[in-house]
Length: 369
Ligand code: IPM
Ligand code: MG
Image (cartoon, rainbow, N blue to C red; front, side):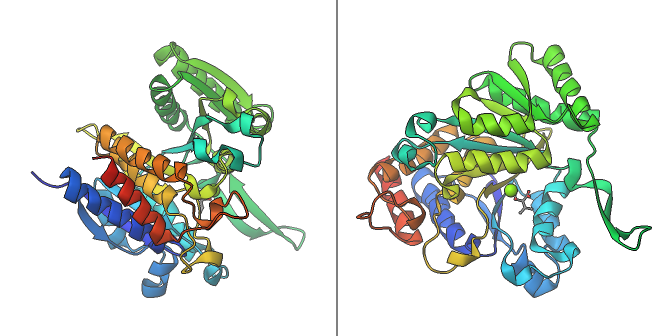
């Protein structure tokens, strides 16, 4: 039997150090659960730019298209701030999303019991929180044409980006949200700005169409994205699945992430359409960025990246029980009060290092056997 394949792209900043812990976890599943993966590692973002002058090479994209799943750490850093837009580290990530056609970005915001009083919101508002943001990832204003910075007629300049969505683009991401809702609390809230944007009107109509024709059993509501942001901080537990466009999804998912206490805890999956074997192209990455301020100091929390691998077990490798095992191990570690510096709850708490956190999770995995 051929082993499932994973392309690992640690990237920049804290990406490589958190990814080291993920690799230890992957090895654990080989040694203890007979789950072996065919692993290749490559460069993306600033790391690729430093070596090749581009944020991702054609060869790396070709590899990403072949493997069963891509695991990415983070891209970007101050060193690259003044680079031309076309070669910025972020372009490497955007190219992967586009070329793999990863239109459905799943961003769960779950509040771990042990961290409920860590949120900037009151504990009772977030305890038990479990929402899933489905963000459209390959279209909208991130990719729409025309775009650019041009001279205008008055001797100044004009910056242009275009919000553009087609029926098909809206329907396919809506379907993935409804599918997820059926496995959860069966509720979808769609967010746009139909009060000011034509693309928002189309978004609302097409999501409603998919609901009425294909998922009438799922409860659907619509909200303007600004009101949605307000409701997310007012009463986040009212939501189950939220589906929204690329730009609103970028912002709303950061808001939702912070409700849970730390960006260092949240994974994400970006999925394409399932192929003939029912498997989608997939990229998994933590929601946090490259955090250059703490790079190389052993302070980074590897949990978001490890939970991203748990999502890969679930969505790419169909290993639900093993995904639960890994999530359970992380729960157990947090319940013991083991914390990286981003999760300090009290003066007298002593933070552990990135590697110590990896050790603790491996130990909890051993305990799960
Ligand atoms: C995200 C990030 C990216 C985005 C950047 C790094 C291009 O903020 O994944 O949320 O804007 O999509
Ligand atoms: Mg973002």
